[in-house]
Image (tube, rainbow, N blue to C red; front, side):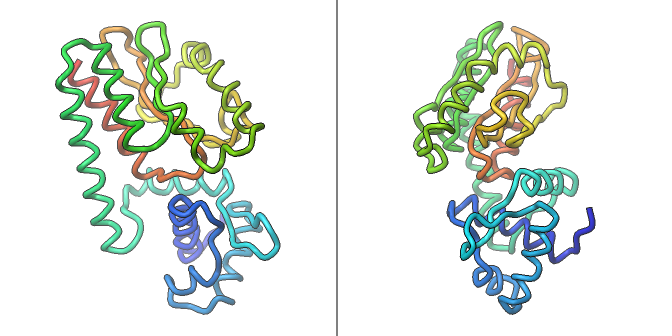
Length: 245
């Protein structure tokens, strides 16, 4: 996919702004951030839209990322391991990561039993991300934070709630059968093998535990989320549990 450096930066900024505000991102906002005219931003947005990376919900609205746009963003931050945004944002994000990792370490290390440690790690992920948390413990799926998930603005639509419920009903057998093999697995929107129309992202980490060599911990939330933060925390939780258990 042909995309310029400025278009890449604009797309990444759209993903992050939309994650923070839940509102379509307009050209005026981007123009101020990039120091160019709104007309220049509109032209770049039009190119990103033609590539299927952003969409315009309404004629007069700004843009929101598509599943393909989120996938581009996730691949970019995964491949390059770079901190996106200005220096102040990078520093704030780093402090947020460190606080989250510290919270996981402190609250999970106090648990003496493996099953209790895994449950506590899930509960901490729910608190830190606002998403639904999940983990496999033996042959069972532990879920926490369903109410937090459904208070997010995306789930005011009952059809989406039903789609997510269907996904959750089928998640445990799918995990057992598919057994995703990467240390960190990210399924965005339509990429989800079940509940494709639920417009959620599933981010899970595989780790070894006393229960299985293929245990999983992760979160499920709307496609609109802080991927850099959530991916970092989920991966850290998996590594911490594998080392500690």
